[in-house]
Length: 361
Ligand code: HEM
Ligand SMILES: *[C@@H]1O[C@H](CO)[C@@H](O)[C@H](O)[C@H]1NC(C)=O
Ligand SMILES: *[C@@H]1O[C@H](CO)[C@@H](O)[C@H](O)[C@H]1NC(C)=O
Ligand SMILES: *[C@@H]1O[C@H](CO)[C@@H](O)[C@H](O)[C@H]1NC(C)=O
Image (cartoon, rainbow, N blue to C red; front, side, top):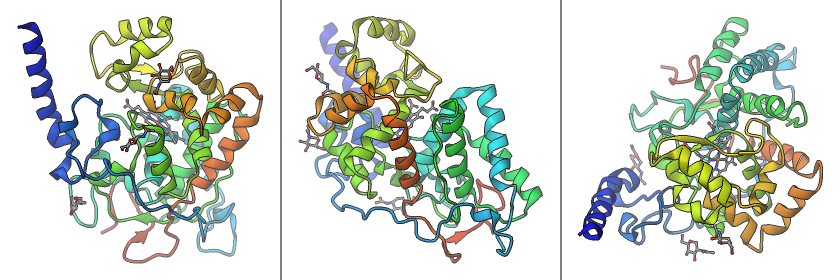
């Protein structure tokens, strides 16, 4: 009886998860679903298939360092990067978790329609309400928007209509990495991106999920022109910030037993409770993540597989053991991510927004 009841609950839960997880049955966020029931993702739905196309390495054509410092350019705004840094410094001092949020915001922006601040939009050119922020990977999860808005409003006073929201997101991720690493990580961040005018929730299925296997992780990064090594390097960002229990509570048995016991108590059966991703140094951007992979102290299956898969285990061990190795790779991989599919020519699809959440009218 109890077993039948449990089966019924799973069935009902899978129907409830159905529409949100599988939009229109043609798109399925399989990497974001607990692998409970194959009915959740109909065979042949997008993302049950691996992304096929391999993107070229992102060139970032049109971006340049110190983009806003050129006195002879119409983009001259010499305080631009300092204004963003001040906003991020204040926010991270008040709550380091917001710094983690800003690093993730950059990733989620760049992987969907390129680094064009499409992740910030609530009002688009098409007028659709189902924007990226509403997609399963982002909803009730992304944070740091208010820091971008604070920087933008200071910038609109200093240099109206000059600094794009896409560049603010990139600079903010660079600055958050700097502060959370206690100055050990200096990402070079060129500027010159323009802001996009569209944003669709269903396109966030391009983001790999916590239940993705190594093949899926590699494929999702390859689709953006990033390598398997880039994927392992950037996953190190899971040394800061937090995650909801629903993404790891199915893995307690595979974790370090002491950590599993602690997390189980903390989650207390509530899927939406958050826990720190790195139990050892939760607010420091450091190579501890790779020690955690080796020690089975990471939360997601997508983290744990990096220590199991033959293609990735060597880099995990090197990052865990060699001082300074990961930090330099992270700097380069973040810069590379910031070059994905950038828009640098103004037109019908690209502009400098006045307000970061709304396209210009
Ligand atoms: C490799 C594939 C990746 C997967 C499957 C993944 C998945 C996730 C998930 C499920 C969460 C928790 C969200 C929640 O519970 O609300 C998370 C948090 C986070 N991710 Fe990733 N992620 C990946 C790669 C990255 C990359 C490339 C970065 C940045 C370079 C990143 C940075 C972060 C940060 C900083 C957080 C914590 C955010 C906060 O505390 O607000 N992740 N990730
Ligand atoms: C990963 O998942 C895909 C389905 O998305 C499957 O075809 C593949 O066999 C899996 N790979 C591994 C290594 O488990
Ligand atoms: C994604 O959503 C948009 C509008 O919300 C829709 O026009 C488009 O057809 C959807 N794409 C797919 C592949 O379902
Ligand atoms: C990694 O390997 C360990 C030990 O072989 C196993 O318990 C665990 O399930 C594996 N993890 C993943 C995510 O494949």
